[in-house]
Image (cartoon, rainbow, N blue to C red; front, side, top):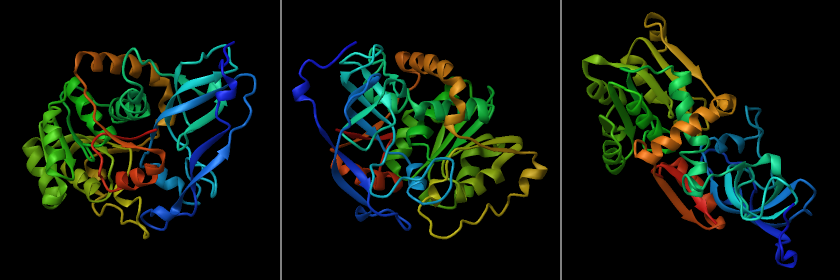
Length: 343
């Protein structure tokens, strides 16, 4: 059993970001509060982790609302939580040593006390610690299982990915290419992001601000259409994809960031009836229900990263106090790849 050798030097408190009020529409700085809270005493089987990076993710916006969903709402006047990777600085667990790097779910704070069983190892011999919140973490598993298991991708499929310069979307496109897609198309919100997608191997990419998404997608897809749509955006993008999908096409419904800040109910795709005649499959999914594929994914992604088949981008913001702004910027599309806060 390993313990920190200088217990007097261990922190007794942690700085953390709390939810001060629930956003109405787009979150604003006043919805968040930087606070300091005492750390509980370390119990048998627990570890104290100093967080190195925390993840801010679009799904967190839904948890800021006091509504029943697949993930419990954040509690007012308490620390938010989410993915984090950090270093064990004290341990009362036989399985974890001081100096080990682990992934866990108590982000939005500098230090976390948690059961050793609530952590997973970060193999920093394979990739930097931050990658275990992105390409080798939940983000990568979302991309991998959404494309291959939910959308049932097969070699020769033409694939369209919305939000393609984001953490998940950029991986989806590269996985599709690695698995033999006939064509991969991405949408993004700036010329720089479009250029990055082409650099990552996408066959075509467009800026959705340049015109109606349906027209831009039809132009990119050409006469062959698309077989798979990986949806991170919803709204106009979903409507456009339905119009361009081929008979028997499949849609993986991963996110709908276009409507996360909406204060009014979004209109459903006006052409949803197309799905009947085209015999389309639209399937929503949560990465939490795909854990049975985690080992398969980890081995394959590590190999792809090692040989350069898959590359990943990170947008890093420094300082816990800047985490709320990083989250708000994420919802506005300010990131390329994974948005992370470095502590």
